[in-house]
Image (cartoon, rainbow, N blue to C red; front, side, top):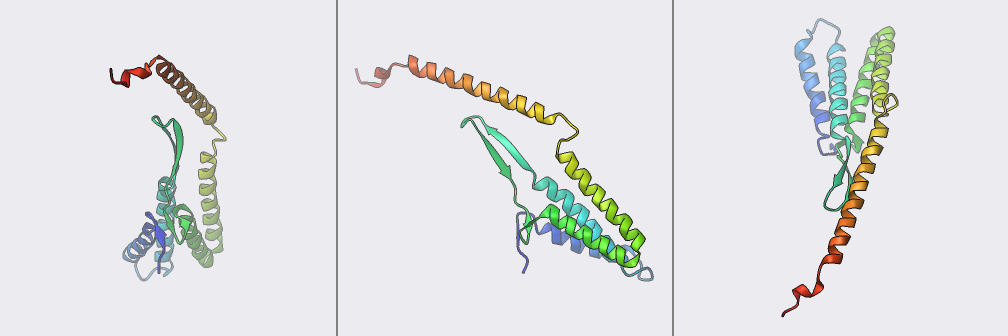
Length: 167
């Protein structure tokens, strides 16, 4: 039984497609591990990339209700988010490579670690001043909200409550 939510089933589909493609691409005379390495690495990279995009958190400002809402998609396979399933597939590929050749296993493991760290450093905003721009934009939005509230209060004060009464 496979348990998934959202687009999490695509992780399994990418893995099966990688196996089929690996069997078609690599001849039988070569190392028998190549189709498995290809399948796990391809499925891992595609699943991690698409899982990171699809499970991205968005903060949206609702103008009518004057509130911020957080939208987060939930694409999982066995209750694990898709991007982490992709990392597991890639780790399985590195393990298979390491069993064949420990030198290439270490090289591919370091390369996988570098790609993962690069993605997390990119999302952490360490090297940019993006946080300051977000704070300024939120302040501007809050100032607009305060202005709209004061305009609404003035409008309520000017209204004549007897205008709805029968004459």
